[in-house]
Image (cartoon, rainbow, N blue to C red; front, side, top):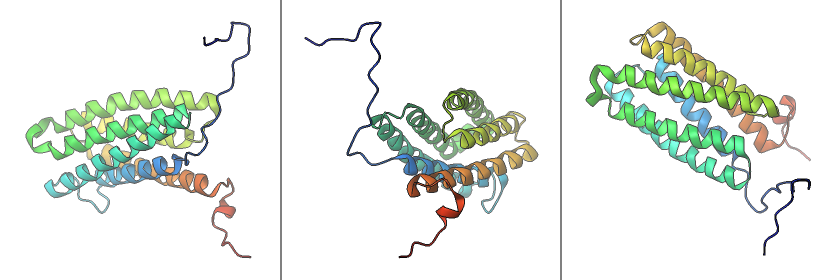
Length: 205
């Protein structure tokens, strides 16, 4: 019969699962990639904003990237990394939904801005919860989550203000900055270093 620890016994620390590769670089890289695409789309950087072709292309890219990030989140659960697993999995589902909204934008007509604003609003609230959780643990995701929270807050106001271009451009550029920070975090995770100079040192014997 299984024995459970009593109230006064110390809890057994959770051991990291052995033999499973680190999915954090994958999750951060895909997060950065999809966030950069969305940011460039809203900022009108390279990708023209609100044209049929760009909206369909961005929708497909974001939806596929969201599925990959969802997988990274599931692997993070396997690694017992709750915060990273929650961030990657939830963001993957959110991006997939946004991608479908952009793909089906023609059927929504003028309601697409309200639909995106609604998505961005509740995602911003959830990002605030994730940000607070990461602050209590000094998590490596905190800088990325802070910038994502600011970006989606601005994008929310811009979408609900009937496609306010000034706010959408600002929010798009903040999202691009968040993507760059996430890519650097992915690089740090892959190289196992925390020093900027070490990350770019050429390996030589």
